[in-house]
Image (cartoon, rainbow, N blue to C red):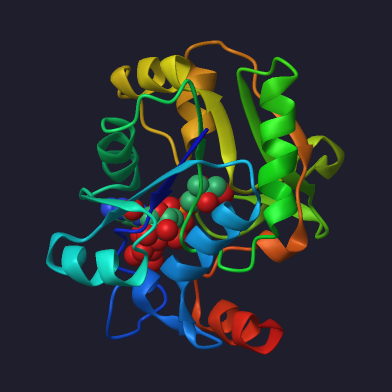
Length: 211
Ligand SMILES: Nc1ccn([C@@H]2O[C@H](COP(=O)(O)OP(=O)(O)OP(=O)(O)O)[C@@H](O)[C@H]2O)c(=O)n1
Ligand SMILES: C[C@](O)(CO)[C@H](O)COP(=O)(O)O
């Protein structure tokens, strides 16, 4: 079982002076934390991380247990670069930007894959009321949130399916979206609030407090 960890993003919304995966939370970088969570799950035996080219050596020092490849301009390019070097039959794709993800969430995704799901994602119900708005920022309607889930990583796939999905080169914000475009079912299991993504300065503050 391989974990592919895209870690090549710049972290523009975070606004730190270095790429987001190399920012520290509680004395460890987001990259180290995401690799550690995958290892501690006990269900992963191959870890591939995709990082910015100029930080290849630094990444190898930080996470010697992982294989390091050069990522790409978009998240999907980084996932493809990592996917290209594994021959595992089942793979998890996990954002380096989710540093407090509990190892148990990796186990839950792997369990679902082993039970026969070809694609599985963790998701949480949405707590806020959701409104659709027009160009002038006026509400057009209220969306039924009971059928919505905020989807996290790790996301698990049969590797052959993920390869086909990426070959299709559709536009999607996550890997499951590419699989959906093939018409293949994606199973949503319970997510975990601790797997939140560090996107903004507030998220980083929260992660540091929780760590
Ligand atoms: N070209 C990219 C873009 C993103 N990622 C990774 O994908 C994950 C989720 O991306 P996101 O949170 O959007 O990170 P950034 O792209 O760095 O954020 P921003 O859009 O604010 O620059 C992160 O672990 C990030 O490092 C990646 O490997 N390669
Ligand atoms: C992959 C992801 O984390 C699932 O929630 C999310 O889609 C990434 O979005 P971003 O805009 O690239 O941060």
